Structures are given as structure tokens and as C-alpha cells.
Length: 209
Image (cartoon, rainbow, N blue to C red; front, side, top):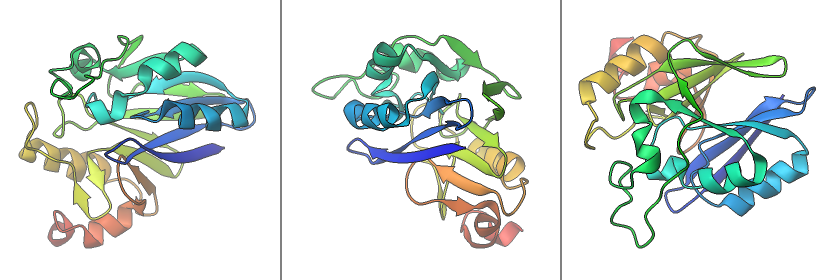
């Protein structure tokens, strides 16, 4: 298995390169900036980039989509509910920046239970809205990429347009914390954790487990 983490952009987004070492097929998850840094790692891996997967459409998770797609030909994948954020700087909240962020449109709309295949590996899509309407998490053997739904010791922001505190809590409690306790969490920002640690220690949920 290939699994690389690259911290990118001013908001220190975790961009992940995940895929099959055997078949040399990878996905770039949340390329939120620093395209040359991401591409340098990709070139070192000499792997085919099959997909760019955005866990949601906020600017700090899509900012390098265009450059990565142009250089690799990868297909951009995102949940339909966040797809307009790719092409609309107002909706991805970058319209006030000196250089607003946009991306090419999605090549594939992801829905709950969809499977992204990378050689012998699979990523299963879980719809985890609340931070954004189309927020998703991605599950593979022993690990889950949680985007901005669940962090080590916290959850994503819920004060954006289209966000919902109650929906975010329900998504994490009912769709993520029910996973195996030893499953490793790779979040959109900050350090990794495990499902078990978040059940026990996350202040938003610990009293409920």
C-alpha cells in the first residue's frame, strides 16, 4: 500500500496520496494547495494517478485540483452536493481572496456506498455531511479518511453556509464512530488518531460512549 501525507496550503490541509504499491495506481485526496510539492511526491512514486478525490468542496481542499489534473489527467471526484463549489469561488468561500480558487468540474459524482478502486485496494464512500452538504469520508482496510468531519479531539466547523452542527454530530456518531475501534483516522487537518481514541477522548462524544 502507498500512503503519503503532505501538509499543504496556508490552512495546513492534509493531502494524502493513497493507492496500490503492487499496481502503482493512486488517488490524490484533498490537494488543497502546494501543487508542485504534491507533484514532486507523485513523480517519486512513479505511479499512475487515477483520481483526485475531494472530501468536500471548500477552497483549502480543492486549490490544487487544476494543476494536478492538468499534469496527470486524473479524474476529479466529489459528492454531487458539493460539486458546484469546484467551479464557483463564492460557494467555496475563496471569492474574497486576491486570487479566487476554482477547479475543473467533477468527472465523477460520488454517492454513499460507491467504491473507488485502485489496483487491489478499495475506498468505500461514506456520506458524512454537516461540515458541508456533500462531505464524505473514505474507508479502506484499517483506515478512514475523514476530511473535515472528524479530527483528533474535535470535529469540523459548523458555522459555514450549508453546515449543520446537529447533522455533523449525527454523521460522526452514526457513521464513523461505529467503525472498528482500532481503525486509524486520517483527518483533513492535524494529527492522525483512531476510532477508539475518539470514542474515549473526543469531548464532543466521549460522554456518550
